[in-house]
Amino acid sequence: MEKLIITGAICGAEVTKEHNPNVPYTVKEIGKEAELAYKAGASIIHLHVREDNGTPTQSKERFKICIEEVKRRCPDVIILPSTGGAVGMTNEERLQPIYLEPPPEIATLDCGTMNWIGEDEIFVNTENTIIHFAEEMNSRGIKYELECFDKGMVDTAIRLHREGYIKDPMHFNFMLGVKGGMGASPRDLLFLINSIPRNSTFSVGAIGKHEFPMITLSIMMGGHVRVGFEDNLYLSKGKLAKSNGELVEKVVRISKELGRDIATPDEARKILEINYLER
Ligand code: KMH
Ligand code: ZN
Image (cartoon, rainbow, N blue to C red; front, top):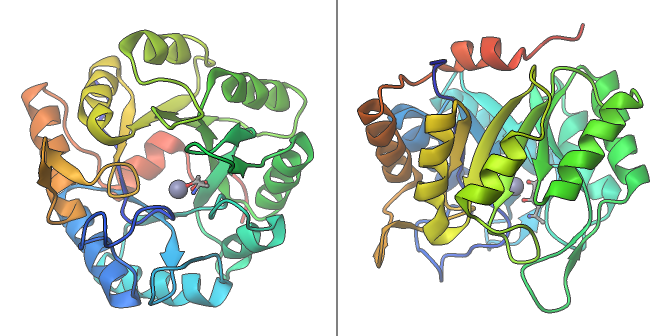
């Protein structure tokens, strides 16, 4: 089977040091967590950034210095900035990291609007927003990871691909178990995997206790995986992870037991056909 691409979602925008004191905020902390995930086997770092006090930001300047720090520690790693940011940010704020020079190799593209983790929050991604983000990334040669929190988002991505806005080859990230999105069951995941075009690739992430069961299924089904504090803070029931590195180490153990080797960043670039457009 193809080698496994592990994405370390090291920080996110929602979790805090109150949830787990090892959630990184500062540039140094973000660099350290990225390095631990990378050394354990992550070939991609999904990056959100924070102010030193933990407030999520999409500031281009903050991304620049965090990316420099990550690159200094992990020279060949693939950095996948968020264009989702945090709920309530404007589209202009959210897009800031794609205007960096050089542009990132890949960034997230969220494929629909949803209720966001309960109460009154809505994560807004209208059709025009998705198209605008895709076009901005297309013109900069940036590949996108299609973030799908439910089946309707998968169908939207496939339709926008058919209409020419989203380019080939599509790479999906199925995010399971987010409150407001789809559940995290084998049935749901199999349905999603069977819904995407044959020449596309997919990765799976899941929230909390669903993380390891769902990524194990993805490993078995030929998909790729995402783990990290953005999605899950625990190494096992009741035991907080000391670092993102510990979570990645656990994935590596599972994958090796199942007979699947781990992709290096360059192998991940080949599998995902990153840099497929002229930059
Ligand atoms: N923080 C969420 C509102 C992404 O990175 O593009 C959006 C998110 C998805 O995390
Ligand atoms: Zn994210």
